[in-house]
Length: 262
Image: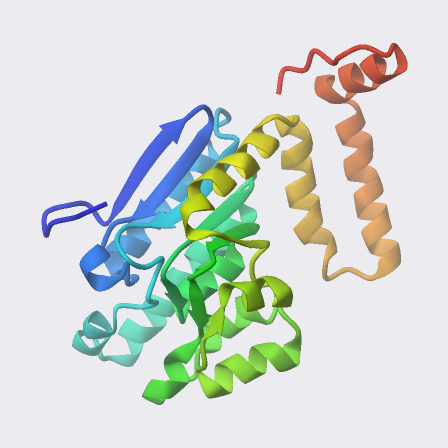
């Protein structure tokens, strides 16, 4: 995967309901420039309205997944209002991933640092090559990774997240899997196949159920137990009225394969 100066910062590939968004700044290790963030936001907004999309894969061109923010660009736009606008734009992208109706999978190779690690943590699922490494290393430059800390601390235990944030140290893919930052670390040569297996499992399921389920999953997390069950019960009741659910249950009772629209 290569890019030249004239190439767009983000490439989109569509296949069988799976959309791959490929960050395309390989010479900058896919650092999140304003242009790349705007492109990501535009695609995520478009995907939200597209009922044919069943799953999204977020990937990076070149040698790395994402090296975080574009530090050179940040220093060129050094006013407080510039910084506020940048972090607000980045946070909006992270929230858009979380609120997208379909699952978003991070396909991670090379390194995922700072806001790149934040991207991984913001995705619903993540599969990484065995050789991939992760860090929130802004502290090494005198900058605490405050916005990456939001997503990181919602994936891994507090003491582990804070360790990464105050030391800036890298963790490898097996450790990231053990800590809950990613779902699985696979052999480098198996990365695409592993992502393909996961997308196939997701796209084989009822998309109505997945759309109901993803929204509910994140909505109930901050609720107390009683409120969460009330909310979940209402979502299940609505899901029961979906044609896929009716057909799936009837097929189970009648001991036959379901004929779902998906």
